[in-house]
Length: 200
Image (tube, helix red, strand yellow):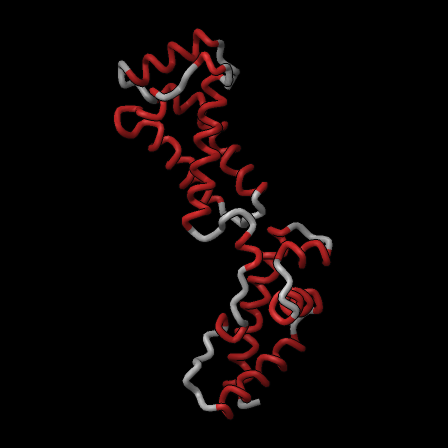
């Protein structure tokens, strides 16, 4: 959609808030909100799915129209950022609040490490012999992983580097490194299951 003039923005707001005709505002800013949500995820180096983007885009419009369009009523043209700028700001805040609620506060999510044994659902109440056996299975399975997967897991879990630091070390983006780590964990679980079933 083309950028609206201040007069067109005023008309759109009037129709939305006073006349209840919300479809034009949605149509005008649908793509803007989508790209803002996507960009915020990317800038924060947080992995996302198409569903995440669509859910949050919908949430932005819900917030815009909630409580009698309260957020749209807060818009002040005299501040000079235009209606598109105001909606972009709300979209950005919506994503940041979503990330904060899910523990992705700033970059702290990249420094959150859970022991690999915990990720692989090893039970702590087992006796030391069972624990040693499970650790041996993990070590054996690690050696069967592709070298890149092994490197990411070792740097993150054993050397305690944040995912951001791991990404820098292997010359990848944080998002790509997160994906490598997730896939490596799945491969590791599968290898351990095969080994434990075959009694190796």
